[in-house]
Each structure stands twice: as C-alpha cells, then as structure tokens.
Image (cartoon, rainbow, N blue to C red; front, top):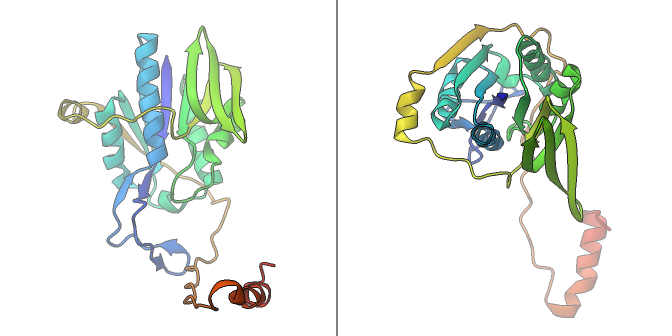
Length: 250
C-alpha cells in the first residue's frame, strides 16, 4: 500500500500569540511543533502499512526550511521517506493555496491512501484534505475515528451528533484524522537514529498568487472586570438588566 501523509509545522498550543506587522503571527520566541492532528495521520499510516504487510509511507509538508525538523520527527516515528515543498512564505499560506500546492505534488505520484490531520491548530480551517481530494477526483472521509481497509475498500467511522456514521469508499481515498483514531507513538531512540539515514527531499516550490489575503489581525479585546450585582433573589432584576442592556444577550 502506498500512503502519503501530510504534516505541518505549527506554533505550540501553549504559545502566547503576538501579532507582527498587523497581519501575521510574530514567530519570535515561539515554540513550533508537529501539528497534533497530523500525529494521528502518521500513526494511522504506520498501522495500515503494518496491517497490509507491505507498503511505503511518504510524509509531505508544504513549509519553510524549518519544517525539516517536523519531517524528521515523522521519519523517526516510522515513515519511510519525506518531502518538503519549500517556500519561505508557506507558513502564512491560506488553506486553498496550500491545497493547490499539495495537489500539484501528489498528481505526479502513485498512491492508494492520503492521510491528513482533520485541521491545523493554527488556521483551524478543516479544508485542506477535502480540497486536495476534490481536485484529484477521489473520495474523502473527514474526521475519522476508526479505519479499516480490506480488499481495496475503505470502511471509516466518524462521530456525528447523537451517534456514529459508517462510510465505505474505494481506494484511492483521502482521510482526515480525528482524535480517538489511535494513540500516536513517541519516536524511539532507534527511530531517531534511523531517521538520519532516511531520505528527506527538498524541492523549492512556487505557490503562485495566494487565493486569500489577510488584511488585518488583531487581538481580541480584554474582558472587562467582573462585578457583583448583589446577593440572592434581590440581585436577579439587576442581573437581567445587565444582560439585556449591557451584554445584549437577552
């Protein structure tokens, strides 16, 4: 089975966000990590390869030169090969531009399964996986929590409001991975040493004109200090007035 897994370098979820030039994240002092949802995709690729008894896992990223670190992490976890589509402006690319760039790279390769994290924790757009699948003309099942592949047929389970949904689709297929699909492994010392000998190709990539332009970013306003309106039943009229006239939620 030939699997391509897509990963992204993102700021840690504990990062204290600062804005640079009014429309971008200031990277100064920021800790960057492998996108947490992409870890589920890598782990699933390894498990599906093991189940099939044969296969190859290519992990691909559209990012700056710094993304080599996250690709090495994926190789240490168990991927066979890595490809960096390198562009210094990639960290600020919108989802549509990223999908267009990845699609162009995937079209030149043979694959059975594409695995994405359901979203990146910096953009939170959920759109790259479905957009790539649509451009390639293959099925896409999103936010999958259980995945079985038998005789060229994908059987995926996803959570929906009030229950679970089971979807079947033929290979080749794209999957976006949700928390609960598996438990990502830590890279072992043996894996880290092996990763140094694995192939990591770097291709300078022109992403073309961005499809979305960020005009302005700003921090949310600080919450006003709380105040006590009274105690017990006597405070209810003042509370209702404040909710109606100040908060305007009633």
